[in-house]
Length: 315
Image 1 (cartoon, helix red, strand yellow):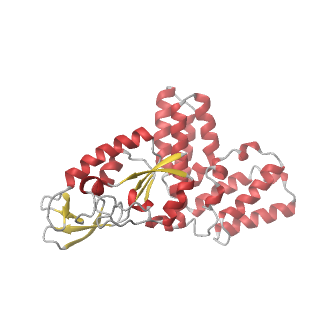
Image 2 (tube, rainbow, N blue to C red):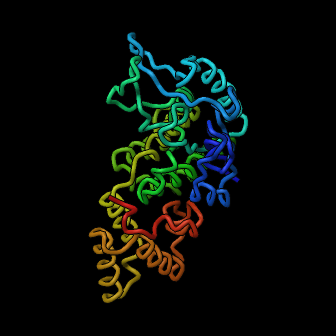
Image 3 (spheres, rainbow, N blue to C red):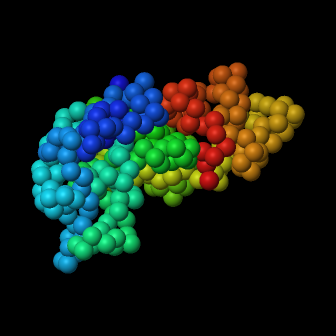
C-alpha cells in the first residue's frame, strides 16, 4: 500500500495543544487506499496539553515559532524533529503528505504571521515543519486537509500521489524498455497536464544524445514537476480528443455524433469526466484497443474514489 505522510491530528490522534484532535473524515477515509505515516512536531517536543504557539516575524526578517504564554522559541526544536521526520519518510518511502491547515508547524498555505508586538503582520506564511520538510522533498505531492474539500485540488493531489509512486517504482528497477513503457502508459495523462512538458518528456524518453542514467534523471525530474501541474478542463479535453482519434474509425456515424457531443458537454462543464471515460472504456473493450487500455489516464487510481465524478473536478 502507498505510504503517505500526514499531520497526526487529522487521523483523530489526540495530539493538539489542548489534548484534542482535528480529525478529518475525508482524510481518515483515505486509509482504505493509503498507509498513513503520522507526524506531530509540537506534540513530540512538548507533549500535551501544552501552550499554543504562533509564528512571529522578527526585525531581521526571520520567522520563529513562539509560545503564546512563555514566549519561548520552539523553532529549533521543531527543525530538529523535522530532521528525524525526513529520515523516517525516506526510509518508509512516502509518496505524498497531507498537512494540517493553518498550523504554526504544519500549515502550508494560510498560516498567520505575527509581529513581535503581537500584532498581525497582515500576511500568511508556511509552518516551520512543513517548510523545512518540503525543502527536502521539493517535488513531493502535498496538500492541506481543508483544501481537499475542493474536487479539483483533490483530483490533482491523489493522482499525483499515485503517479509519484509509479515513477519511484520505475527507478528501483530501471531499464530502457521500462522507461519507454512507462512514458507510453502516461502519455495522455501528461498531455492533460501540459502539452509543452508532454513533448519534452517524449523527447527525453527517446534517448537522444544521452546516457540512460542521464535520461532517467532528466525524465524523472520533469515528470515529477509535470504531475504537480493542476489539470485544466481545456487541457483534459485536448487529451480526450487525441484519444478519440484511436476510436473514431471503429464507430458508426451515429456513435461518433454521440461521442463528440459528450466530449463537447464535458468541455462545457455539463457532464463530469467519468461519463466520458465510461464511453471510452466501452469501446476500448469492445474493439480491444490495447494502446488506450493501458493508459494511466483511465486506470491510475481506484474508481471508487470517485475523483472524476464531479463537474467541479476541472476548471
